[in-house]
Each structure stands twice: as C-alpha cells, then as structure tokens.
Figure 1 (cartoon, one colour):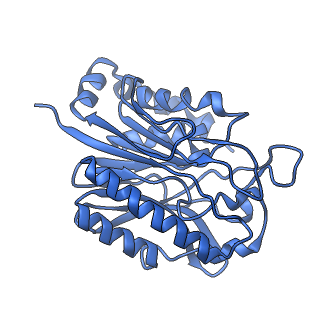
Figure 2 (cartoon, one colour):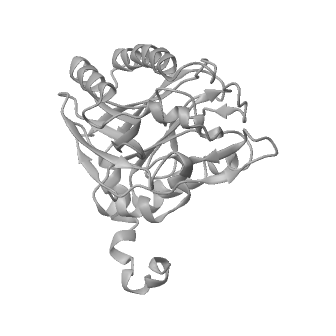
Figure 3 (cartoon, one colour):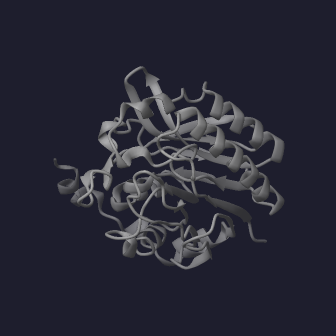
Length: 295
C-alpha cells in the first residue's frame, strides 16, 4: 500500500511598496498567507511550505537597516506562534521561512518546522549567502550578507507526522553537499523556499533540484514567489514552484505568473524503490572526497 503524502507549495506576490513601514508589510503578507494556508488545507494538503522570507518583500535587493525590524525570535516570536496555531487548527505540517533574531545584531535567514499538532520541531538556518551585484541598478543585487549571518545548525531532518522533512533555502540549492547530507540524514521530502528572479539562474531552476532528487532518492519541493516588487523592480519573480519525485520527474507545477497553492502527492514508497535500484548511498566513497572539504 502506497504511503501518500499530499504536499502544498505556496507561491505568492507581495504588493506593498518597499517605502511602507515594516509592520504594514508583515500585516498584509500574514493576512494573505493565512488565506492561502486555509486553501491548502481545503485541498487536503498535509505538509505545506511557504516561500523564502514570506512575511514581506525580498528586501535584500537593497542594503537598508530598516529591515532589521522585521526580525523575530524563533520559536518565541509572534509569527512562529501564529503558525503553530494554524498547524494545529488544520492538522498539517508547516514549513515557515522567517527572518530570525538570535540576539540584537545577530540575524539569520531561517525556516521553522511545525508539526501537525502545533509542536515546534526545530529550525534550519540558511548556510550559503549570496552577496552580488546582479545588474547596473543599485537595486539589482542579492545583498544577503548585509542582513544575515551564515547558518550554523547544519542540515537537520525533522520527524513530522507525515514524513521526514529537510530544508535548504534558495541559494543553498547551488551547492550539492547539503542536499546529499539531508539524504544521508534520512530526509524523504526536502523543501527549498526561494526568492529568485528571471535571468541568470532561471535555466537552473528545473535542472539542479531534480538532479538533487535523483542523486539522493527523495522528493524535492521547490517554492518561488511571483511578480515584481517596488521600488526595487529587480526582476520578475517567476514562480514555477514544483514538486519533483526521486526519478527527477515533476509531479506538480505552478505557473510563472499566478499566486497559487501548488498541490502534489508524494508516494514515499517510491523512495525505497528508487534507492534499491540506484545504490548511490551504498556505492559512495567518502574516503576519497577530502578535497571538497578543503578550504
């Protein structure tokens, strides 16, 4: 009998102008995402992942200390508490990207994982941080090292009510070592909440992560926001969120333009079938890989 898990991937736009106060951004985004979580629950989703920094714009297009006010404690902060209530209300697992404050001046790009009974299970902190000028305008960069410290919690896997969940965030997807560690740590579904625009890396969106799914024998849920965000207008967030199976096949996919909840079913028994054919974990030779751990 198949072990089916219904996965929901939420891709949304953010229309509030960047000049508005941080609290106005949070209020609008939370109101919208509560509706979308309810929609996912109506579609019988069991595990739902939101997009990177879901409760505001992708403010990393500029370097402005105003956005430090968006940070919250995790799990003590109000958004984590609210999402715990939502998870318990609907009986679903929530994967929630947040801007975390450890102490004043020490901030992380973080994901909290909440079980279907509302229990906080733990968090992942983004490990690889881009800090690049992506165009001629001052608003076409990914200035993440201004806002975040690199993650220091490794690659945890969370035992939820429905599946073993792993996470990496956006830019982390370009580095294969983390996805491999998540597989070795027992992940069955790995989520990549992102904020990525059309251009340089779009052709990699459906190349790298299906490859991670195949190399490690698990499902990957890739989530990206949609639309453009003022005043930066750094590019078009192209959505295209998808769920990919261990064969590298896309099970469900969202549009490039529309705000939506992408729903797909992950058959966890397929993981065993694939791994028993492609014995990548058996045949790996870690004793020969020292070079990749050399600075």
